[in-house]
Amino acid sequence: MRDGEIAWMGDLDDAPAAEQVLDLMGASVLPGLTDAHIHIFTMALSRLQVDFTASRPQSVTAVLDILRQENARNPDWLQGCDLNEARLAEGRMPNRRELDEAVGDRPVLLRRYCGHVAVFNTSAMRLLGLGEHQADPQYGHFERFDDGSLNGLAYERAAEAIFRVAPVPPAHLIRQGIRDAVADCTKLGLTSLVEAAVGFSIGYDRENEIWESLRDDDGLPVRFGFMAQLDAREAAARGLVPSFDRRWSRETLKFFADGIVGGRTSALSEPFCDRGGTGTFMLSESEIEQSILDAHAAGWRVAVHATGDRAVELVAGAYERAHADFPVDRRHRIEHCFCPSPGVFPRLRKIGAMVVTQPSFLWRMGDSIRAGLGKRTDHAYPVRSVTDADALLALSSDAPTGLVSPWDGVRSAMDRLSSGGQVLGPREAVTAREAIDGYIAGGALAMRHETFRGRLQPGCAADLTVLDRDPFDLAPKEVSKTRSVLTMMEGRIVHQDL
Image 1 (cartoon, rainbow, N blue to C red):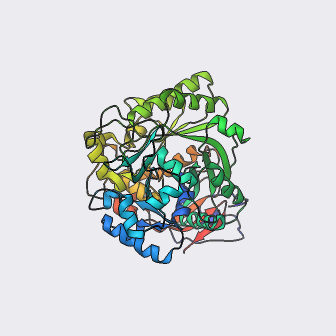
Image 2 (image 1 turned 90 degrees about the vertical axis):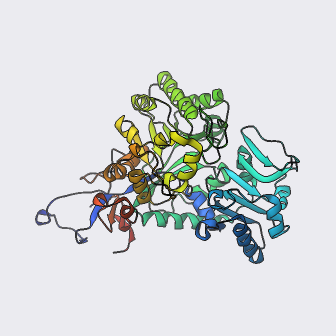
């Protein structure tokens, strides 16, 4: 390696002189992996809140007990993350009356692990300016008690509005949380990350200010790409223009077409099996399409969260129209593509649009997926069919919703196993090599980096990971245990555990 690039490869006997030699004792070396869809900002916030990941409560009572303990030593708001009602015996979230009884007047605000649902008590409700019979916003809703008053749960746009005005920890603590989260990523062999929606956690302006303060921070030893959760008009009002950079790229706008399968808000053509209903769009269909067209015309890449088949079809059609109007290769993206519409992948291949999916969702929420989608689960979260169509594909985590380790994602892409032991859509499984390629070559494609990284060859960036095992010939469960013992960014060691 020289000047941040791979300068030579070959037999040891033919090697040129080098200032430093590292003998890796036969360990496996791969190009650095990419997480093409991750929420580092949310992960940083979770380190400063009550995190239910480690405690893994099994009931509403256990959740309330944890909050009582935190209440005794926390003088401010009680905020928590990664709460998952599927893990609770009651199969539901605590309501605001239960929260009131547990912590009294202390304001409580919890975030479902997907980030699309807020849970709050009466004190928080009042401080947030919500009335007892607050009207539902467009493209969002509140759950209610029998008398019509709010029961403490808010979904989609209702939850988003709450998170954007809720108090946040001091900026210096969030910055340190970001550095810590990035350091954890390098331990997994990740050298490039795409922050999948600047604005998703606490609003664009508050988040962007913190990110900008970190731009030249040596504690972020990875390549970053950013999606701004803004439309073209909002971006223009802030003076933003698309900006491609190998280390800090801001060329993408992020939209939400529909909701999520877990909240039963994905826009489907057929009803959910357990609760009925066909989900919802986050804007009118015409507004979603026009937002995509405007962004494309303004020179932006577009990434759209689309989980249900109606949403996927709408987004694919908008991309086709945008490409016909301005035939420029922007490599637009569909995030998740949970339930693909029929025949969509050859269409995406034709216009150079990508599918960016998260296999570890199958492990984390697979049983809920099966309950909601039934037989449609056989084709949910596709990988094999995208590959067979020769469409552009990247695998990612969507952490903290999904598991942050790419090796958990590789495992799930291989065995498609839920945490409850169900195999979900085995025909969509791929090999270890194909899955790993989705994090290396696919990740480079997702960031438009394929010309200079993602391969081990002279002239490519020396973004490398040295692994503690050979991941290509292991059972899926063993692959998931893979860790990096040495990670390099442009030839500089950023993690070492040799």
